[in-house]
Image (cartoon, rainbow, N blue to C red):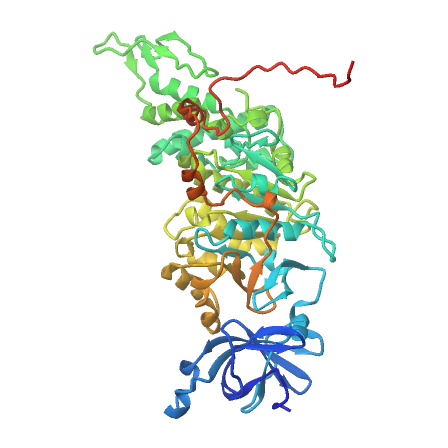
Length: 608
């Protein structure tokens, strides 16, 4: 039977756990086989093999080929032939039903066969409702690779690859595969939130996404993150810098007082005034916070009892004009300093500077969510969250490319906190994450989830990675430096999509996140082609080397390399560096030096 069977590769010679050693047949003369009109690569690392066991078939992945794959006690003359192969078993099939894991192991001398197109369709050909198409098998491009959407979202995932490996295109392709209709119906009701650090995805996903930006272009919505929705600690760290315990108490006491005043004037739904804390998301005026604290710090007194404020000009909290008091003087006549001052004048000056800096308007002056002096806002948090998650499109892109680097990580942490807390506390409602899950895609994750970062963004990502599955919040990390991602977070990613990785430290981190028996497959990472990935984990039926679908040119991210040779070969045109400076100053790529006023009139083409 084996002599005439074109799929025959060899026989099992050793079994150790899920790893088996195969002695290849002497008849294998080349690395190619033609079976049923299709060409297959034979005995190559990353390809699949089949071991028939009665009514069952075991399937495995080739991890090593050559003399080093031979068993330890093999005679030297047999080892030198190099006709050995190590296979890592991964699943089994009974009839047409494939299942990961093993119920039995092969025996010595069991035959090993090439996995043909029919076998591959048993593994990948099922079009279950929860599976999405992501690409084609590298060794058989007529076979479509599908991933379990449930496993991809609930068990978290990571897309890892060096710069230029096709990482951004893979993200765009994967998100379109989730959203767009297919034979299984597609996921038009999906909820996906993409944190776009470099502004790459607006053009690629604009037709299926609602885009929010700190520097909005036509067709985009302005991005606002209300400062009063942040925890007091992270807010003070941004607006006031380093504070000792007494200084922190001075700020938090005043914030608590302003929030209590707001709640007592107009009740907020669901909030019991007795349970109000300084971290409760209640609007308060940052202008009043500054004004009342600076007034207390700078007050001078006159009179025998030193209790008469020596006020000259009351100032104005709306315009951030400080009150003016008579300067203190030595001696018994005064004026006298306020002996109860907390020594926070420097921090209050920083707060005023932050509020006057227009770059931070999206967080300190958040449009309709900006409180007046009484803490009243035009809109509440429900409209903010509905704008991000409750619109008619399945994808939301938060373009953070215009956010100053000084506040970027803190802003990401604040966004994640608002989203997670909202879905956590609404988990029993139809808008919550349990009944309508959310996938959060985090680009450039290594910038804020490194082991030593210790920032609010890292803490929120860890919380989502550890607890998000129970509350319907899934995470997809995207990074070019896996070695800089916190090991705890990476270990919680059940599915790894690894593109080309050249750095040995990064490859070691990816290997460490996968079972030991897949290390041979991960050795292929440096030689993967652009747009080619090794996919392993919860969402994949088997660890697989896959060519990810390439989106149409108009749907690709703005992350392509500049065409250096073409640009340098062409002749220079007239250049205006005043436009460069205008964009720099405006912090907007479309800024111009002067607006051209053009009067457009309709032209009548009818001949007289």
